[in-house]
Length: 126
Image 1 (cartoon, helix red, strand yellow):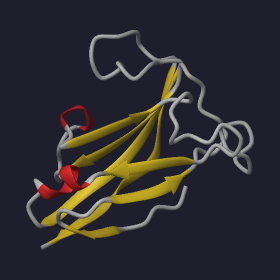
Image 2 (cartoon, rainbow, N blue to C red):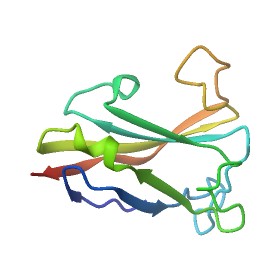
Image 3 (tube, rainbow, N blue to C red):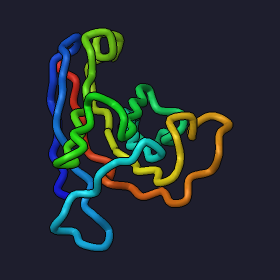
Image 4 (tube, one colour):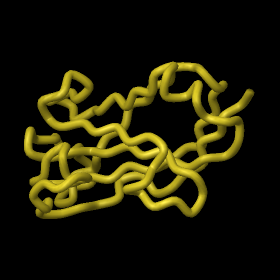
């Protein structure tokens, strides 16, 4: 999965579309099921995923997930970014197969966890 540096102004809304390569056939997109979750996390350098500044979760039943193409629209609102100080952060996405959006809490363990987008720079401008 190719990654890209994201640069936005503090307080702006932002969205991008991502896909999950199918593990068995990387030329195809994996389609999220209702029991799967893709997590987007925005982190400070060296911060643990579970302690991220922002975590957004998407399952196969969410309107941001296209069940035909596998495209997932990750959305940050104005309220998400206005509280962040200008600087360099990092973002990543993780796929939890067979879990649910409660996986970061005290829910069932997922069958498989994969990093889809490695930590990549996310720059907040003034």
